Length: 302
Ligand code: SF4
Ligand code: SF4
Ligand code: SF4
Image: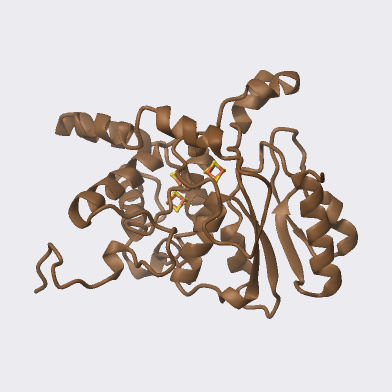
């Protein structure tokens, strides 16, 4: 039986050769053995660049936006979190469903690349599950045109079930006094470089023009100081409120190790309390709690 990687390469080659798609987006081996960055394949002869290993961590959904204004049809390999990112983009009318072909892969959970690097290649099997995978509730893709592989998400689901809780970090912050909370968040965001890696990688951050690229608007400055950094943090968190698919990419790419997911999860927790349980990026038909109107909405309209 062919491995997942062999199946990926074979399907990519077929789709490109038949002209069903003009590009395939997947993962390849780059400079480092502990990272498998995205690859964009347009030539059938290049399909052997595609890899499937424990470091295919990047969420590929956001890259679809780079081809939003082309006529190309694009095939995308999707794990659970990539598929939820695609649902995010479809719900936000960012891309036509007919222009994408989704090849689902049942995800066994990815490894923490930086920890693997510290352990060394010979001990790579000991690297822990990536932080973003510890609470993953949907390792299998929620949307796909075809699906590769056997059920591989058992380890992830077991880890999620035994982990100390999806909102454990939020509850720790909630238990702090207001002064302690202020110190917690300011010490985190005082380190923010305003590199915008968290925004750039986020499938929910898909505005045509981001407020943080419009310094003439007067809303925000380019300075790196506490006030501007906190304005950035809170604004971005509110812009993805109810739409965040919990892929953990923002926190994974942050060069300063800022606990961005604690902020995102605080909002998810509050929205669940206010509007009922909701998981973004699962059901194409179910609109986010802040994107729909209900007669029994708990808030008043004035
Ligand atoms: S978040 Fe889930 S689907 Fe995504 S890499 Fe981790 S286990 Fe796989
Ligand atoms: S805010 Fe972070 S976790 Fe949420 S969708 Fe964006 S990148 Fe993923
Ligand atoms: S990735 Fe981290 S350092 Fe960069 S803007 Fe986001 S929070 Fe700030």
